[in-house]
Image 1 (cartoon, rainbow, N blue to C red):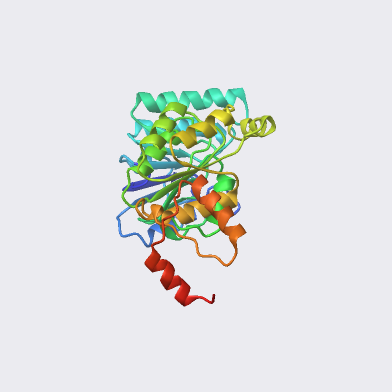
Image 2 (cartoon, rainbow, N blue to C red):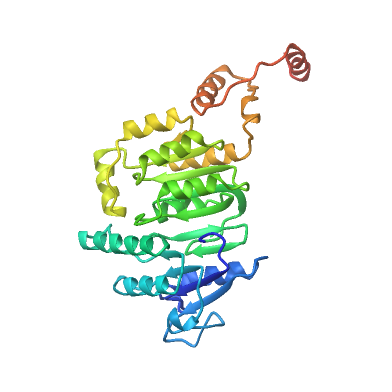
Amino acid sequence: MFFNPSSIAIVGATDDPRKFGHEVTKNVVSSLKHSSQQVEIFPVNPKKHKVMGLKSYNNLSSINRPIDLVIILVPKKAVRSVVEEAISNKTKGIIIVTAGFGEYSEEGKKEEQYLAKLAKENGARIIGPNCVGIINTNIPLNASFIITPPKGKIAIISQSGSMAAAIVYGGIPLGYFANIGNQADVSETEILEYFLSLDDVSVVGMYLETLKDPLGFYHALKTSSKPVVVFKTGRTDQGAKSASSHTGSIATSHVAFTAAIKQAHQHIANDEIEFVGKLKALSTFTPQEQMRIAIITNAGGPAVALSDLLAECGFSLTEISETTKQEIRESFPP
């Protein structure tokens, strides 16, 4: 419902670049111009007759048909009524970009809980609030306010919109992207399981500050036939406190978290550079190829360091045959 919709309503759509809803509207409209799939777009703005050249509607009810995906970009005070209207119109997928909820106050957290409960009771799902949006470059659909990345087979899940944007702006080739924000409803584990099920995804990267569903997350990692790279912040007391004010999240034991990743035979990144590097490397290998790595070097020290790094990342060095060794000797100076 989120990544392959046949219809999208953008509530808060606008042509005005000074307004919050402009960038998402522009990206949705421009990305779908090149789509091979038929996806209908319904801008919702009661003050405009047209937005981005498309007919604008006063509200969701005036569209007069069910919509697969509703993207909400209105101020927080108006979000509840829009979600209620979307659910009454049989919408199953809702993305709340608007911030000011659980990351802001206890009142905001209660509002999140109300919206999640309402969605669950009516068979709908919510991504967000306090999120950037989603991307599927295979359609292509950019339902976010960041640039469309080059197409690839990497999928990224991120709690932080700005961290994900920094990675995407670095030019990493992606197939899918999801910024989950406060996770009022849809969790990191659900998105992870979905991405791992896709044939056109070879590796999944996750930027996390905490876990909503630790046991489900661990099970998904352990049973996955595909590599998953996890970059987790909030490792210290100070970082955990910052994470709480960012997405309203609760601290996770970093020792237990790291042990679980290693026990599941998956991959940890300690910073953004390592995260992107591991994703790019793992996206170019199949599981069979990962076991056939050789090092050719003119100095011993770097080769030893690389051997350690490969082992820590789950790779093995291959044994080089005598025939190959002889061919190497013939190709290089003594």
